[in-house]
Length: 142
Length: 203
Image (cartoon, rainbow over all chains, first blue to last red; front, side, top):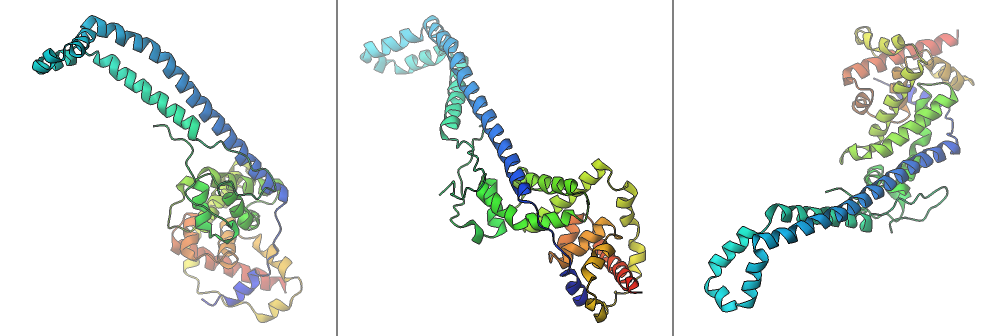
């Protein structure tokens, strides 16, 4: 199909220029959204960190009391105080220690540590969204 | 793991020299300067494209604003290897249609009618070139604008995208969401009507 004449025709189509206000309106809208998201993210991570600290306290307390009840602290104390006995009966000692470890609360504590560490890392290493505003040309990430 | 803001992977010293696809990748990392550069390049074209779907200045501005906001919001869906321009115009067209339907600025039947006319267009031969004397008319630009008004918005869009934005029919088909043969049929039909309208105006 010979469309050369139509190509020429459409070059005559007048173009209107978009208002500069339109450009700025889009940027302002984008920046509002990103600022809000950054604030929500920061609040979420701060809440996670605070809740994990709050949860860690009773869990640690439970681990300590459970260890004392199960005899873990006694086994560990024996291993440290009488090394000769510990070395000669190391299999039985290890089994006894393993048996007395409060497993579930230990796992809970590890999970709380992971949540806390992730929240702190997110807060420490996230770049806050800094609106450029109008007319700024400096690169944000050099 | 909860994701935190990603470190920028693309370091750009001169945004104006980068291609669209590189800037789009930078936008995925929340690079606002890359986004602003893309906006500078395309805001005029999207503005004039939106004029094919709306007439009121307020509506056109809304379509343009929503289009670029959606580009920022959904830039994560832009796939590596694709061209940015057709993706942008796809968003613009969908945004324009949503806007029209919401505002009921154009009757629904008008938007649907374009789909029923491919059979007629298929039977047409290729349109003849425009007569050279047409280009001697001083008011041709204004007549062209008037002639385009009689076309369906998607037909107008196809002509603008092909002759002004130089997109292929394959790309245009993806933008308007119809098979390429349908787009070619609509293109032929639109040219026929346009030619008839322009030559008729001379009489």
